[in-house]
Length: 508
Image 1 (tube, rainbow, N blue to C red):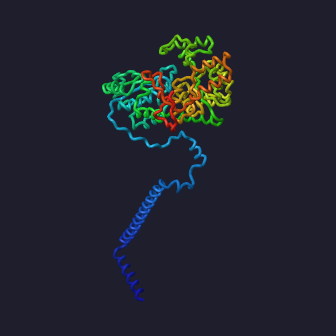
Image 2 (cartoon, rainbow, N blue to C red; image 1 turned 90 degrees about the vertical axis):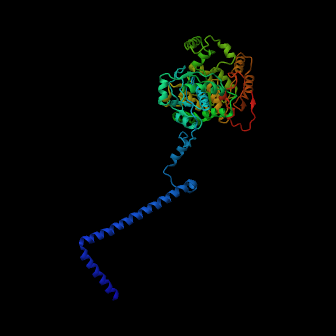
Image 3 (cartoon, rainbow, N blue to C red; image 1 turned 60 degrees about the vertical axis):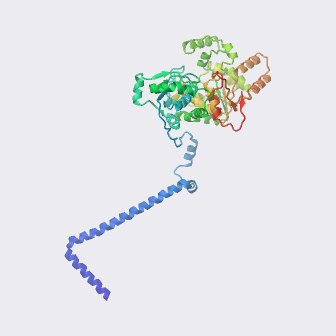
């Protein structure tokens, strides 16, 4: 009863308070209770969210360390086809941590104009990056040759991945796409110094003669850059930087790389393949004066072409004398005999890495009769696939370069820049088989065989024996003091950068 009485007394007191306060006060009191309840609810929600976020962060941290173990069986939003195709798409860029920028006092800006074909320019770019690094200057992205025989309008960015070029080498040298505006204006007004550097120079030449010119003029333009750095006698770190630029800094554009992969995949589906750099194009024959096997009309056409280009200094050339000295590219007929004598499988795919062969199908008949599976990029791809690089010889050469790197055997028929640079790159990739043909030896032997002085068995055995040590195996570069043009080219055998796998080097 006491409890009931107390309850009734409290109720009476509450009713009295309500009367005293009035209806408006009661409403305010009720609202204050409600607002406090809502505030408490929001506080509870906020604390809950913070706790959940903290848990999520900790789970992510655990995932970094234990992810492969914890989450490998979790369902993925990607289907298996997507994953497998993604694994095959090597062209997709991988996220690689950029090297830290090299900090140094900038001595000025170096502009360079490369001359020649793709691989001549490639080697020049490597040299100029190295020169810029050791002069502590800023390099402007090199300008490519647009005035040579090929008349190719391609810019650096049309052939090479310019952003990768700049970022991958930033710990060695600062590279800009163009001059800062103030200096660009000075160049437009002709306020800069231009010159060709001396060929086959060492670093002291650039430090003592070129660097003072950069400091004086702020901008120096080297307008001819092929073979401007010595093959030998340079510090090890210099040689390794040349390799780093060549094998890592210079990547072709994603479009060219993807097309190259497609060609290689098409070839691989049908088995092994040999890349033949058959340098038997009109410009090479006109320039070298080599017309063996050509008819009189063709010989006259080649002579006219040679006279039409003033920078081809030699005009009167004895083709047969030059051929016997080994200074002419092998003809398609000579190439067919050589490959057969070497024991190359008749059914192997032979990819022709070259432009249009002079004389067309008539001159190619001996080769296609001996090796029926002769293909070219134009026969493996749709015409539309090549639209972006048609009439751009350097981009076409870049595609051939990629296919040549991946081939089971690489055979150049001339020792031009592509032959030499690809051979060096294949050495870097593990001494992949590259048959270095000795043309002087071969043409003498071929003439004796065609004249009936040698049987086929004798001819074949002599070809095999002579070339058994010319397959791209490890060897030391030939050094000839004071005769850099006659010694081995650095980019053909960059021995300072090669993993030799404890194989003894031969001296040739």
